[in-house]
Length: 148
Ligand SMILES: [Zn+2]
Ligand SMILES: [Zn+2]
Image 1 (cartoon, rainbow, N blue to C red):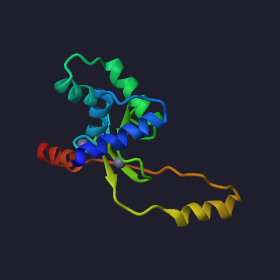
Image 2: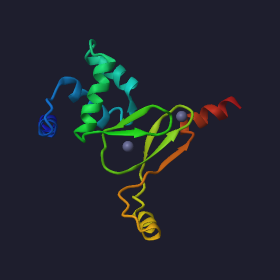
Image 3: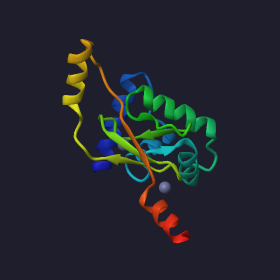
């Protein structure tokens, strides 16, 4: 029942923007909201193909574009030259592994005070800020120490 209402909500979000709810759109959004948050297009393509064997990488890219346009997902640029996609569209921070490219959420509260300080110092009306963290994920650290 819950899944049905999620589908309805999704459909409403899309139709409000003039898009139809298609199976790839539904599948990709579901992936990014549950099993594979922060996935890149290639990973999404691999996952979607398990259920829709005839889907093309082009369709996956177009679908990601449509979902981002509709405000249902966020495109992340974390500096590895590969866009990652997030089913969580609220403002939050990310940490990225410089070795394997894994992206995870950093559950800290927004730095509103810092943003206000920037406003005071520059007299800009600051609209948003970006902050990303980089380093080695736990798995890569283990692998490195295993090799040593
Ligand atoms: Zn890693
Ligand atoms: Zn995230």
